[in-house]
Image (cartoon, rainbow, N blue to C red; front, side, top):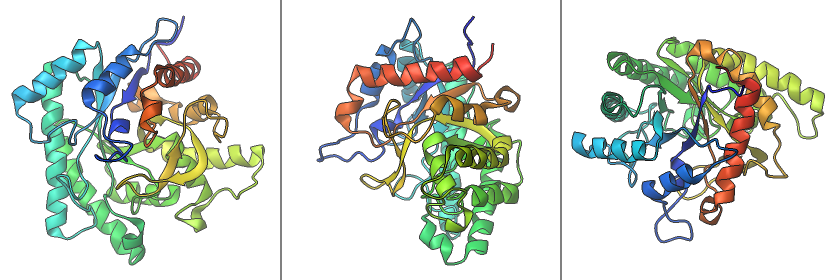
Length: 341
């Protein structure tokens, strides 16, 4: 019997991240992303849900309750659930830097509050019954480098206040590990930040296979590199175990992804771990085997779904049905190997 848990989700933000109006890669609407997701099918298995970006043009963070219920109806109409939500915490959206002054911190916390409000509406609607709210420091590494200790201390303070808000709404927060985010840009700095916040029941880690591969290489933190170019297979798995042993106890949200060892940024998104197609011949990761390191004990950490992430793919690739079928097929292999019933 095939495993039925965790549920298989597709992310909606690849239609937005790195996309800009007036370019060859304009934003792809929520409606179209839902259509593409719902159409994918492999051996009778379909995507079971989506993870959702609370950001224009997909979503107005201040949308009325009726408008949000209409969005929930639309998603449910495709026989999809909503899992994790991404809070609009960045400058230029609702929020601002988690490392900034009091005004910036207040904006960051307002973005978390708005995400929790939307989560509550989706939960009461019934389209959402699991998942967390994703955040990051919304600050570049260069600013953090000016005073690392003070920067981490300030981000931790902001995250603790955000955890208070999440607690009040019965939500959990997942801090997204990615090399472009201050204080979260290496595996060691990410652990240090999580320990500084010290709210394991409310704030955990969101692991992405593509982003955490760059953790191994120490791209923005050479002193914390676990591998050097030209590493052997044995060296890779030793390093991977070191990293995942440190971060897995905190991991409450997980992205299946592929990386070719490069960094990439498009539009306003700073350079980060480059997502690749699931079957990319240049991919550095054995996706199924790597996923097992993160998903060990996942049910005990109340992980009920996993999500594909493929940011900054060309629109032409995103519009192909074969892209999504290949992704879904990979997700099924991950669940068959590491899931449960």
